[in-house]
Amino acid sequence: MSVVFSVRSMPGSERLEHWQEEVFRTFVPLRITLPKGEPFSGTISTDRLGPLQATTVDCDRGRVDRTPRLIARASADYVYVGLQRSGHAHVDQDARSAELRPGDVALYDTTRPYTLRFPQRFRTQVLLVPRSLLPQTEGELQRVTATSLPRDDGLGQVVLPFLRSVADRAPDITPTAAERLAANAVDLVGTLLAEHLGRDPQDTVGGSLALLLRVKAFIDRHLADPDLTLAHIAREHRISVRYLHKLFESESTTAARWIQRRRLDECRSELSRRSPVTPTVAAVARRWGFTNAAHFSRAFRAAYGTSPSAWRAGAQG
Image 1 (cartoon, rainbow, N blue to C red):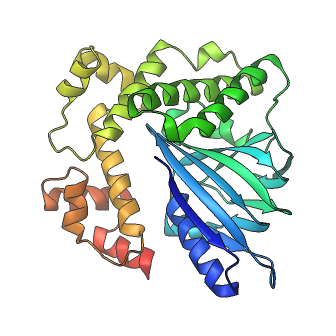
Image 2 (cartoon, one colour; image 1 turned 180 degrees about the vertical axis):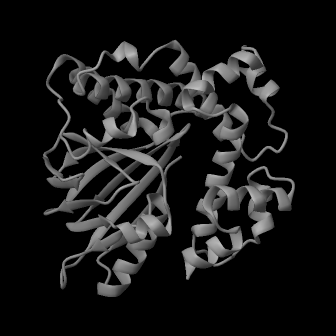
């Protein structure tokens, strides 16, 4: 079921405040600039697809900036796959700029500054892909951001209609089907990027990668379960614990460390949010599977260099 937020012809500061709050919740902290003295209306519709998020934005013209200050305030490790459906857009990142017309697709990365400019009313669909699910290295991704990816060659004619169809039908897809479609979508995006980079897709996409994606998606669904164990994960995927460890060797980590880091990421994200009701740090930790408050505090400090309470104070100050 979609989560839908709309604003209609709201006055200046009020419309910007409401719209910006919803954009923050849906994506990452961003600076939004709307034309002065113009009426504004817009709708954001969001659905979950396993580890992915599919969001459709339909609104009047404006500008969005992901600045270094906002990145420092609340980091997030996503690659956004932007599918332009109507209107024009300009994407700037990594010293490149791409103009997107209806039917075009481009990537941008939340870990580095970017700018989106929309000179007219537009409709765009964005697939939020956790960076960890893509096989490309950081350096490879920096070579393809803010670039209109080919849509008229053989591979583009297969991949892009599939991604658009998944985004269009996201509200009606069951959770079980969503997991499978998400794995397929990530595989296809990885394949498209590999070809664009001049690499053999077989170097990056294969059976073990698909299994690793499914394992990661399963872990994300069960992060809040304090009883999530490696044996349980292996059993659910009909593999041995030893093979589970082998899958994570390509990530330069272990499955256990991956689980802890994902839990910490979710805790950090929740502690960064402004909310009318502020849960305690201990409650946030419990919500994401940490049963020992002292252990959580030590792990958080080791990962981010500060305590959970200090992180919350800095993010919301």
